[in-house]
Image (cartoon, rainbow, N blue to C red):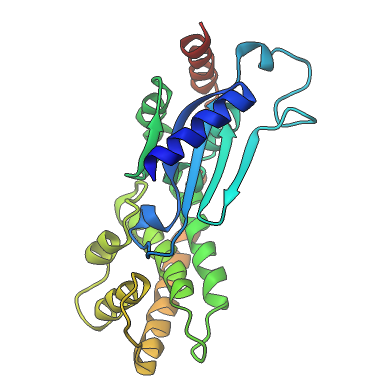
Length: 260
């Protein structure tokens, strides 16, 4: 599949007259939760030729979009951001972008830009921004959960951001993405860890059932952890993220490296 994805990326380059700097997996495969039916969620960062940016209309307005949505089929979803958009989101410590940078499934990488961005991560990482993002994601998914109708994928979509927020609280850094690793490191040995690992096995395609009592215990665990994380998040202060000059310089250097 990697060869097909790279071929599609090259087609996108040629069609849109751009250069792709980075392409990765951003869905369940990057979390280690893919089943045989899981699709491929490919995300990429690209840059236009220098002259594209030399106009009075800013990128992202009118015809100069900073996003490329590329429909292929139900099994392959491809979506990309212009480097200007990616760097503006990086300045805000955007969790989705940081997940792209932290995945261990990289389909394509060219030039030095992505490595330079990764070297700058500590200066731009905002504990408050990221932890609030994952707490809200967990809460929103939890509201959709029902003890009567069991949706394994939805429960994992509650637990994954909950554990990502927990990692940020404990280690003050952006977390690893592999869900089983987060469970191993953050969930205490005992009943809840057994239940969560059981959910993982079901998601991966094992024909197993979930005990209703386990679901009740899981609900209690989620409620307690979300409340604990909420209280912690309220104590966090905003981090100054107005450091734009280094990102402007990186963008300019990328233009020179790619299009010189």
